[in-house]
Image (cartoon, rainbow, N blue to C red; front, side, top):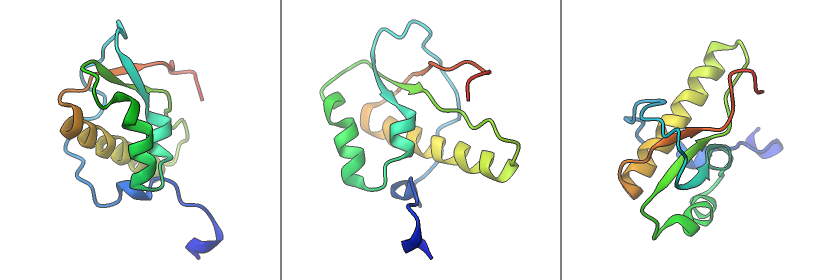
Length: 109
């Protein structure tokens, strides 16, 4: 069945999700931003490396929270939250403390 559709984010399967969701927001955004949406859509480790390659030698990197699930399905919401925590945990291991920046407001979809 998986061969009939593209399943995004499988690269994050099995990764730890210990990073608390939506913590330490940087409202100034005086740093380079890596898009949460692009990381959520990564389907392989090569995709993740390609997305993060421009940030490897940078000190000030933040995650741009440019996607928020707005649906009512609690299972999908929990899945997106878990994927986000997995991504933040991975970035914390790679870059240290990574602040978050919210580029969308609560009304965005």
